Structure formats: structure tokens, C-alpha cells
Image 1 (cartoon, rainbow, N blue to C red):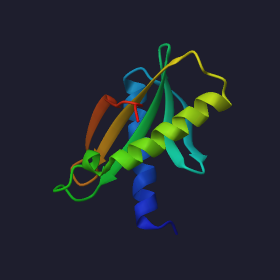
Image 2: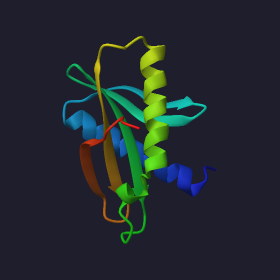
Image 3: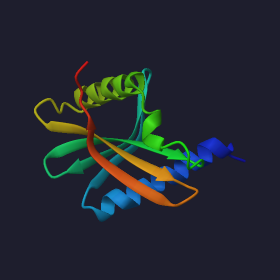
Image 4: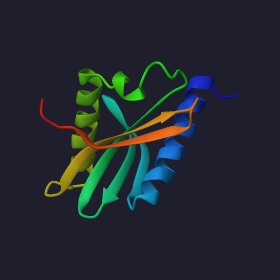
Length: 119
């Protein structure tokens, strides 16, 4: 049996994936792991590679986006840089989006270009 937190995360990622597809993004990869970070979803939006962080919460008093700290952003950026190098995508536009899922209400929010790669 899956641990509840992990199952919640996987369900949120599936909802986010469906949500993004409905907005015209093509999902390229899911759950890309590096030793210093993970990318939940990698998508393509036209000529732009999109690195998507999916956050979910069961408690309505804490917004899922509030859990993405500066340190977490830095880990995502490092993983994205490694992804771009691995796939030799050095001359492509990239951005960082966030999708939040509140499982208690079923609300999904989308924050395109949620943070910058700057350090």
C-alpha cells in the first residue's frame, strides 16, 4: 500500500497533467530525478520548455504555493539546468510554472512563469 502523502502527490500530478493538456501544453516527461532535485512535469508550450512544480494540500488553511520556498526553487532550477544539458537544449526558452491542487476542495490553480531561474 502506498503511503498517503505519496499517493496524494501522485493524484495531484495526474490532475495537473490533465489540466495542462487541456490548456494546450504537451507533457514530455514526468518525475525526472536528479541527486539535487526533482522535476514533477516537463512540458512543451510552443517553443518553450516548461518545468512544472505540482503542489497539493488537504488542509484549506495553507495554500500549496506557500510551500515552495526559495531553497525549493533553487533545487528545481538546478534540476532544470541539468535536464537542459542532458538533452542538449541550450538554445531554447524555458520557464517555471506551478500548479496547485487543493484536494479538499478540488480547486486547481495555475501559475505560469511562477519564478525566475536567477540565483
